[in-house]
Structures are given as structure tokens and as C-alpha cells.
Length: 477
Image (cartoon, rainbow, N blue to C red):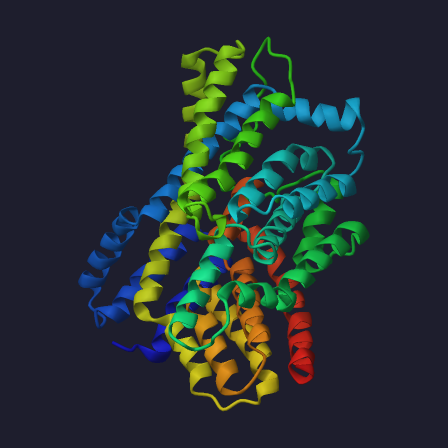
């Protein structure tokens, strides 16, 4: 069935509820129920049954289950790294021994640098930047909201600009289908590479993050959060509900253990090496064809085994202690994993409603000036990703439409594809039901809604600048 304009109401209600109430899981569940009310022709009993089944069905999708296991296991690893003295050793090395990091600005620049350099996968980028710098940020009174913004803003944009990862594999797959269908007669890799200069939102986002780090000229809710941290020493608001339990991130170093940064660096190094290795293996020798979820799944299992052998072999802890701390860390991940489960479930429900297809059809049926193709594709893709919480799903729908529209209007196909990718990243960047937004809250132990509220004004600013540039490029193309 075609549900038309009704298909955009559930995601809008869900997002409004999440932002106004701060109860993400409850809002997501109500959103799922509302989706199914429409699908079942307003039958409450059937919609409730379908909603509950939809939540259970999440575990039938391998990529979703792998992501959830990754979150649980990374929680265990994060706790072990703290107890082993890895985090404390790293902080001491940077602030006392070498005095490399001496200020708030230095801490934020470190998070920014990690986000730029580690482009193998958006979740890993966020995780490393947040985990490595969170204690430093607390020490130098950087608000958790600001740290989450930095981690979030240097993950997807970088992965899109340097697509030697699962992002590249996804986009190439979509482009290859269009080439196979005869829409264009250009190598998909060529299209992807030539679209990179037109991923305007990513460039603007990366530059503005650096500007706000160096200048400190924050505005809106972010300024309030930063003022609170600097003046009152509160990195979290009084009403904050971090998505990771404090018991999982503020454990003391195990008695008798001398803190060492290597207790953290070596497990992280194994993780960083294993992700591209997994992409290479699953892609049969081609990283751009690999499975991102499988690579992450393999990587975290290898790290779990490595950490156990390393810590037990070095006498940092015995097997029982290792497992006790590991389970404690897993327990701390229950809030964020709950959000992810419901986010995946509402994503499936929204897909059934055809929200993305409805928004895409608005472009298909429109008569537009070729010069405005880029900005319209960008804005529509942004709305779609914000409403659905997925950039990959947006790419799958919007890239073919952008490509076909550009061909029909004799426009710049590289600009159109770059605009679709930019829009997908923009909407995903600030959507409260996006997995990367949720991961950013997790990695920095932030209140998820506080992260969303403080980040949205920056994302909208970047979107406005990007829209102007797309219009200019449209006339120049």
C-alpha cells in the first residue's frame, strides 16, 4: 500500500516526543506503535502485536544483531581498559609525563584529530575518539555535549570523504546497480571519486568543528553546556541521564596495578587493525566491497580474546576477575543497546510505511530548474535521513533518484550524487534515532537528548551554508 503523507507522521511524532520528554526508548516504542496503527488500518490490538513482533524481528537481521553484540562487548572492553589502568596511564602520559595535553582546547583537538585520522568505520571513529578523550575532557572541564558533538561531527563526514570502508562499499553498490541498469555509462568508482569534491556538508562540518574548538564561540544550548562545565565544573547537566551507567565508566584502577597507557593502546591497536582486515576478507580482497557489520563483529571478538590473554598473561588480573569486570561493563551497555534495538525496529517500521519512497517521489514528480537539482536533492535527502535515522537507507533511495534526475535534466551527475551523500550524512548527523548519534552519546557517556539538542543548531548552520554553496555550484556547473 501507499500511505502517502501519513508515512512521515510517525517519525516526526517520535522525534518530537524524544526531544520534549527525554525518554528515548518510550518515544521510539510509541513511534513504532503509531507506524503499525497506520499499517493495520488503526487496529490497536493488531498494531501492538505487530510492534512487539517487529522488535523481536530485529534480532533476525544479522547486521543488527552483530551491532548489538559489538556494543555489549565493547562495554566490557571499556571497563577492562579502565580497571587495568590503561585510561589513567594514557591521561598521565599526556598531561604529566609529556605534558602534550595542557588545556580544554588541547583535549578537544585530540578528539578532533582521532576523528580525522581513524576513517575505517564511523562507529570505530566515534568509539575511539570518545573513549580515549572522555577522562581528559572531564579533567579539563569540557562538557560531555561538546565532546559528543566533536566525535559525531568527525565520524560520518570523514568516512564519506575517504570511502575506503563500509561507506564506500555501500555507495558503490548503489551506483553499480544504476550503471548495470543503463542509467549512465560511467564506472561506479569514477562517479564516487568525482562526487567527493561535491560532498559539501562534510567539508563544512569538519571546518566548523575546528573553528568552534579553536575559537570557543559556541552558541545556543551548546554555549550553556560549556558555560556550565567551565564555571561550575559540571560536565553533565543535573538532569542528565547518560546512556552508559556511571558504574561502568568510573571504576577505579585495580589495587596493586601500575597504570600504563599500553593497557589501552594495544587493545585499541588490535581493534583498528582488525576492522580493515575484516573488510578485506569479507570483500574477497577488495575493502570497498567488504561488510562493515561483519568486520566490526570479528574485530571485537578478536580484541576480547587478545585483551584476556594480555591482561591475564601479564598478571593484571586472573580469569575470574577478568570475567567479572567484563560482565560489569556489558551491564553498563543495557541503556544504549535498548535504544539501538528500538531505533532499528522503528527503522524497519518506517521502511514498511515507505517514508523514504514518499519523500523521494516528491522530487520525481517535480519540475525543477537544473541549477537547483543539487540543493533540492541535499535538502530532501537530509529530511529523509533525519526522519528515518539512516544515512545508508537514504543513499539507497536518493542516489538513484539524484542520478536519474541529473541525467534527464542534463545536469552535473557528480554534483547530484555528492548532494545525495551530503544530505544523507546531514540528516543522520542530527537525528535522535540515528545509530551514529546514539553511538556518540555512548562513547562519551552523554545524555542522548542533550547531545541531540546541542548538536542540531550546528548541523542546521552547516546545512544552511551547504545549501547556499550547492545553489552556487548548480549555476556554475
